[in-house]
Image 1 (spheres, one colour):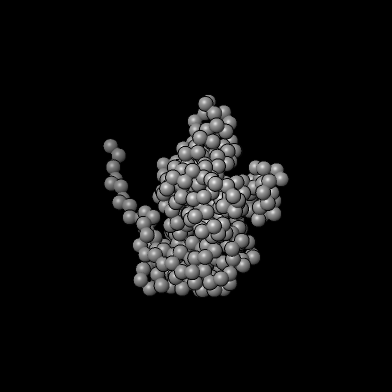
Image 2 (image 1 turned 90 degrees about the vertical axis):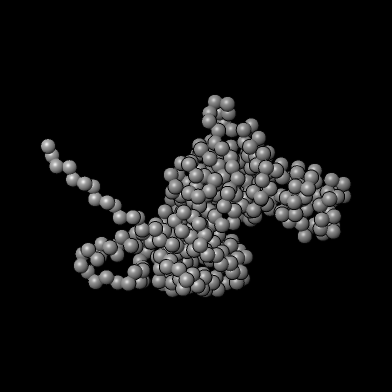
Length: 359
């Protein structure tokens, strides 16, 4: 009889703490995150105007503060803008003066840790798939409703980025030829009808009018239409204001129609609605689901994807960025172990790292 050799016990997998950074137009959110997506420490800083170097300084300062308290192994950055396919350069940001900015190299040189950079919608989508509303689904489409519509497609826990790293700009699909002018330069983009901006635009127009339907919203802002914002409209809808409920339903209908087009193109199993506008909950999601079911190609003869609200809220961006960074930390550690086995001089861990990629 052949000898049966006992299996060698596997060493426990090394699971580092990493830093996730979410950069928006008004704030920088940073956190230390563990491998289960749990937040260990959190820091929030205002974005210093549109100055690129000041934003970089803020990122470095946040990371340095965490590194003094925790053994962090890598940094992930979610940036509001177009990030190239190598995830090293922010090609363009509508909120900051990033134009072909080599953000990863600049930050890595100063923090002396592996750094990964990605679009903030991608990082948020990855977090929802791994730790939030998309758990258990292999093919997930995320739509983030804020000022516009951001988006991402996640396949088997990997973000699909396209040939140039700029996939997921769903908000700029044209749905109404010669429709509302969009900031991107085109007309009739989806986000002009199914975003926070669309909701506020329609509500302000009615407040400025003499419509008696807008009486409640007019009283909320003392007649100053320009002071009206999305959270006020959402709250008015929760309080039972018929116009606010109707406006959210209009946005939901446009959202459902657009999502039906996305389903025809990508056939996801789960669609996640996130961003500030998703705070409206069922006031938005219910009309979205109804419009989606009416517009879906092959309806009644196919499995419909579930449409759910995001679970992680404003934390999704930095949780996903930290998770991307964890892959870079593991690769860096594997390289360190290999060098040690080769008998070569072993540098201090993470000293002057080379380029690395996230998930």
